[in-house]
Image (cartoon, rainbow, N blue to C red; front, side):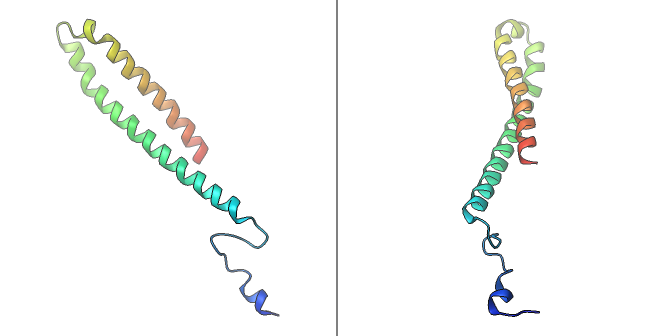
Length: 97
């Protein structure tokens, strides 16, 4: 039973805040989750783009007559970037889940 006007409207959340909670903390947590989600999405996009580039470029390098000796560093750099992005996506996924 509602005894006063305060009791009737105290359950309505304003910006996700509960009674007795700190609104700034909730806003910071929401901002952190949003920014981490954006960082995760960008990392996944970079991983997909790098995978696509390597998928096309590695067979082309191996098929060309002097491609491997002249493009060895580029392939190794792309592979290192891909491995780093795999670990980055895994770390970001564990932080936002």
